[in-house]
Amino acid sequence: METVLARTLPSADIAPRRLHQAMRYAVLGGGKRVRPLLAFAAGEVAAAHEDRLEIVASAVELIHAYSLVHDDLPCMDDDVLRRGRPTVHIEFDQATALLVGDSLQSLAFQLLAQYPLAIDPQQQLEMVTLLAVAAGSRGMAGGQAIDLASVGQSLTLPELEFMHIHKTGALIRSSVMLGALCGQLTEKEMAQLDHFAKCIGLAFQVVDDVLDAEASTATLGKTAGKDAQQNKPTYVSLLGTTQAKTLAESLRQDALDALVGFGQTAQRLRELADFIVLRPF
Image (tube, rainbow, N blue to C red; front, top):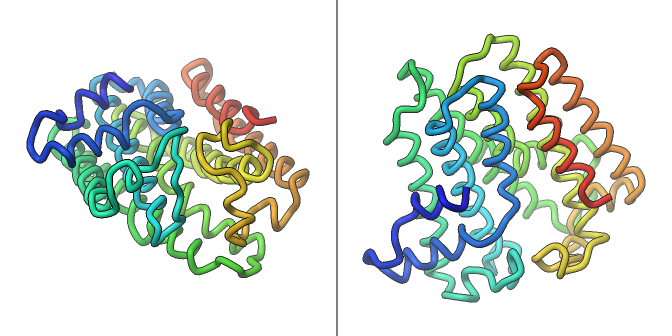
């Protein structure tokens, strides 16, 4: 994926050079690439061609990277460290960081429109719509708005889940579904993958909350303990660490159950479910 993303992003030698340099800084050289991995793993279930999967995997990772750049800005989470190095607005400046996010988002949709990704053009339009909804006010951006509005408040478990289904889960779900749409699956099989994606997307956030509370800044590559410092509602603040871990494990099991019947083709999805939930514990 690093090679694919490096090829996909504009060269730092092309004007405007500083913006393109900052875009490459934001995307390359770090990150777990969980969303691209999920796209490839779902594509394996659907027998999708690798050339198609590279494009959708890049698109979701570019959306993810843009969201991190904007989340780190002083008007949002105000962080100075991301993936073990200065955030984009610290390394460059705030205006450049804002433009980096805008440009990465635009590039993601350019990719989905520019390359043939499905046999049926209508299916490719569905893919564009899927990512747009996942990134917008009914997905990631909406979840972030709820998150910002919830600082200092006590949320119920359903309210917390609603926030994170949008903020984190929507883009993870779109990663799985976009990978699957690059191939061919039955309606029932798509529904199974959708359920897997929803479970693992929520589990990802639960684990993220636990890591913020327990892991060090060096381990995370970003400032640890920010949630507590900013008085944000999290699964740890609501349930405690032990119950949060139990919830993550329950969601992992639900995700794995959704893959029953796929056989060996879903092995990478199973491994990713384990990686997402079990890696810190």
